[in-house]
Image 1: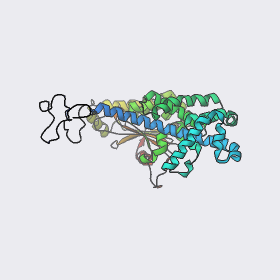
Image 2: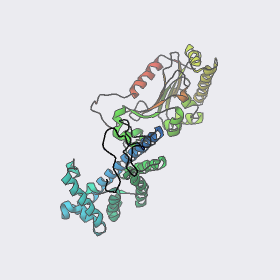
Image 3: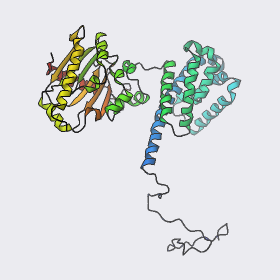
Image 4: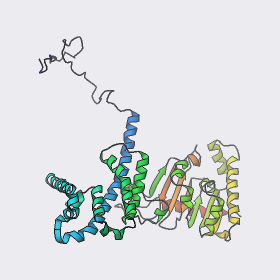
Length: 412
């Protein structure tokens, strides 16, 4: 008999706990399951796994931003308040800075620090201080309490607090492992970037004005050479990286492809004229519309005969009209090549450390609009790898462009 007055099933191996063998009022044993299976009621289907991965990806990105902001704010608080309190209070300067208003949360941080010490959680001696155990809201309290000390370093207190308010929702969601919507994540990324700029930690990468440095790129950019973004097709590229952002402030533009539709069809002729008149030097390299390569490409894509060649001709004519309206047509060069097209590339400011490249390979049965897109950032990597001599992809495509340009002929 069990403690509840129910008769437990016998322990013989032959008994499997079926209803006909279980005595009245008895507790049947759990049915045996195949090894490695939790049963249909506990299994996750493909949609559930997809949702979990999406949540993890969003939380991971948000955590990186929050971590960067918290570390930077901690460094700013230490730089401003330590010289004031440490000469009198030594290692207890954080407790003194918190004052009576922050007595409760600062003592909690002291207790967590002691527990971490005893359990061996302090892996870096630099973290063995009370300041390292303060959360983002507590660091904010120190700034607010001592605002006259921080005021010389900030333009507006309200801007700082509003940005921190925007992060608070994300911080609570991430700390409790709850679902984070894409809209809230985007808001958190914008607020974090704004905060880092306020706190004097803005990126010094020249091309960041055109393609903002992402927090993930800032931390693990060396894992992917100089590839900073990958898009499934050109539609998604333009949604995140409009043509105006790509070409709008270029001082040099080199492009190679079949018809160069990304530039010709998404950046107006008037805008190109203004860009060239402002000093931008342009070199455009089209596939010769009369070449056999165009005919092969038409067959690959299932297009009507002459359809692609007419499209390329129209793009070339449009660029010629742009060139004819310039005071210095020599700064706007157009040439054609007769080789098999292998890729399309737009190299913006490719001769400097702030260059950006948009590259697509030609797929056998997909048009350029449907092909995957790589976005590359030129110059030294944000995070240096052990192999300092490792080169990215940007120089490869720039060299290919120069070789093709040398073998091409100008369009009059």
